[in-house]
Image (cartoon, rainbow, N blue to C red; front, top):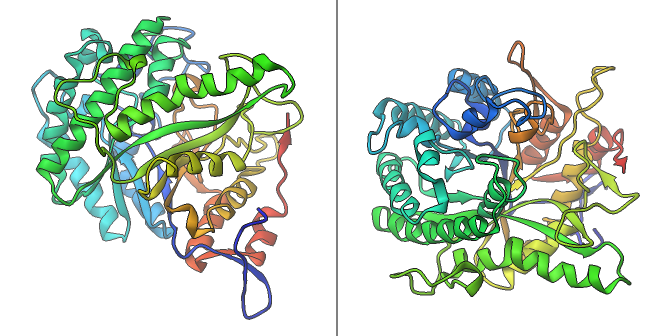
Length: 444
């Protein structure tokens, strides 16, 4: 925080200026839309015990029906940018058959957002996929790449007059580990060989999609959303803990990032794909950042006595800067923070909607005030509380509270705080006094 540029307003109050930064929110289709039974996560949620609270994505926030209400909320807060995804299972419900009605529904939503002054970034794969694709073996098989590229071609062709900014794949490293290592998502097996195959096929798919999208749309801006963590030894005096840091980083995030950014496939991912020549396969550096890992081995861990959110993840703002630095050392492309947020469930007993999200926003956004970091966009995860994969409906990441029983939306203090930051072009002491000062982190 010491290097954060600070100016002073005409009342002599400190002001953290953010004139170079576009600010908005992110979401994914399956986590908000509801109503779709044709996807792998709906199938996974039918098995008792797979979702911690027993919920399914079938209702989520009912956004497929209530999208106009959510669009009005989003534009009313003045958000400048919005990252959304399209649901593959809606658009291609059967192999090679495309639903033009679903595509038209997405066009209508995107047009409404743009009419409200919001720039839209569209994700083409965000964890979920059609049940039929899952049944084929999903990303473990080489055929997954051309099958998905067929879908990419259809969507980009249908939306390219409205959309120029694309995320090909969201968090391929998390998808691979969640599905085939941690057993926290479909198909829930444990196979290091499948983790490797999935990462390799997703990296190849991204590189080929990058070329395809630019073939279809010359002015497109294409990247992927890379989940990164800051890794530190749990005990800095333990040589095994120290050795675990670079190994964990390489296996989890570094090798796949190199393949997807540059088209260069290391031995860990297998052979160099035919027809992919190393070069540049990104127009921006997409970064999803949430927490730091205390490394004592290859598993995740948290340091004692640190601020944590309501899922027990460490709140470590400096890690965002460290991940940005790693990316910028490898490319001069602009950084888009495609996700950053925290689970803050407030205090249901007293009706308090949140306890520390405003403080979280202040701590992270203040670090982006330095324009030399190269950050152009910040997408907060997420807009409305949504269905959080294996955690179900319990964690609340939204700027807007959702009552799942009534689907009633209520803007939280963090939503008003972010709206004020956008309107004022930065973070004032007055805004901090109103929104940040009353909040405190929970210590783990």
